[in-house]
Image: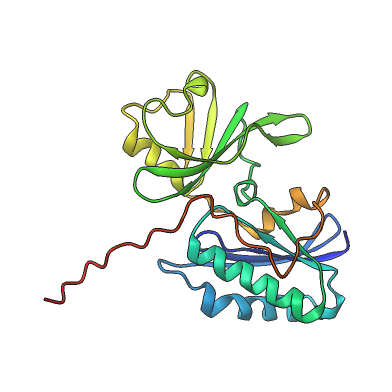
Length: 226
C-alpha cells in the first residue's frame, strides 16, 4: 500500500491523515458550525506533511472519502484529491464515507452509521460485528426515519453512530430499548485505515465523481428582498 494521504470531508468535520502501510503516521481535523474546508483543507495538508517530514513526491497515492454526505464537503474534498493526484501523477483511491467512523466503542452485534441527509432523512449503512471486525451488511441507503425504519433490527442490540442519530429520537415515536445513540461522532480520515488493506483499483482521476446518492436540491433563500 505504501504511504497514503487520506482526506475525509463529507461533513463539517474536515480531516486528513497520513498512513504508512497499516500504521497511521499522523492526523489533523477541524470542525466548525460552517464549512471551513475550502479555507482550511490545503493548509492542513501542508502542515501535516511538513510536521511528518514527508514531501508530496514521497506519497504513493491519495485516498478520499467518496460519500455520501454533504454536497459542499464532498465536492471540496474530492476536487482537492483529484487536483493533487493529477498534478503529481499519483493514483487516486476512494472509500465509502459511512465506513470511516470509530467503531472501537461499539460493543453491540449491529451498528448503523448515519449521516444527516436533510429533513427527516439520513444516509445509512448497517454493519455487523464479527471476530474480524465490523463488516458491512447491505448497501448504503437514503432512509426516511419513521417507526418502520430498520424494522428487522428493532429487537436487536444496535449502536447508531453519526450525527444523523439525533433524527432517530426526533422522528421515531419510541427508540428501541436496546439501541444506543452516538450522535456526537463524525467520519474522520484517521479511521480510514480499516479500508486501506483492501483498496479497490485506483479511480480514473479525470472522471471520478463523489457518490452523492441523492440529487442536489438547493434550499430557497430565507431572505426577503421585497
